[in-house]
Length: 165
Image 1: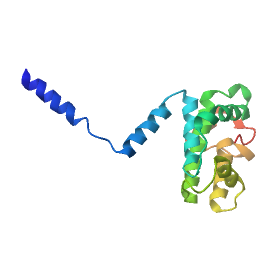
Image 2 (image 1 turned 30 degrees about the vertical axis):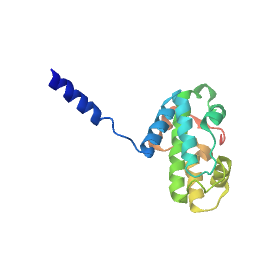
Image 3 (image 1 turned 120 degrees about the vertical axis):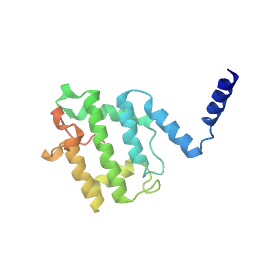
C-alpha cells in the first residue's frame, strides 16, 4: 500500500512542472477566449486576428457588443440575423484577416489602431489589400460575390447589406 501511495505522489509530482511564460500566456488567452457566449468568442477571435498587426489593439470586451450588433444589423434577410449566422461571418472575416496579415507581413507595429488597420485594408492599393477586398466581398456576398464553400455561409441564404466594420 505504501508503495502505491509513493508511486502516485512521484507520478503526480512529475505532472507539476514549471511552465514557461509563453505557455502560461497561451493558456490564459485560451481561457479568456473560451469564456462567454459563442458569439462573443467569435468576435474575440476576429479582434485578435486584427491585433496581430496593431500597436494598440481594441479591447474585445469593450468593442464586441457593438461589433456584434452592427454585424447582425447588416445580415439580410433580417429574420436570419441569428448568433449562429453571425458566428459564420466572424469566422470568415477572421480567416481573411489572417491571410491578409501574412500577405502584408505585418506585426504589432504595422498599424496604430484597429481603425487604421481596417482603413488600409479597404483603401490601400497593394496586392494584399486588393486580395483582402475580394475575399471580404466573398464572405459578405457583397457586389454579387459568392461566399467561400468552406465558410458555411452559402447554406444560410444570407448576405450582408454593407461592410459592418
